Image (cartoon, rainbow, N blue to C red):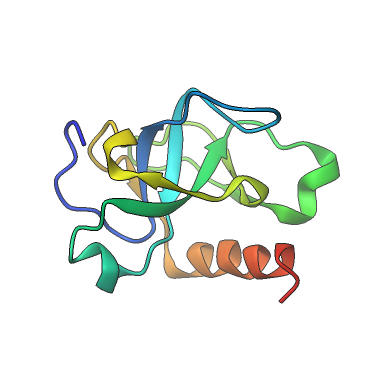
Length: 118
């Protein structure tokens, strides 16, 4: 966790997602931490994240969440809900770049529930 001290739910951090397999998103990219804060407070070895991209494919628009630039997140980004996954905290490469508000976090989690058929 180079440069990362405290993890915060809804925080945006850079994560190294390589190696990617098949259609997975890879490379160094921002991710939003979705893990509950109670679990983050005990410093888990893994966290559940939603990768961000500067592009949104129209076929997946119903699952993507547009995020405006803020703080160190300097471009409009899209939360790619179909690519949510658990990663090791050792993949996190930076201090927090930005913070999503509760409404944005709620929108991502609602779309994730839609993805899993809930």
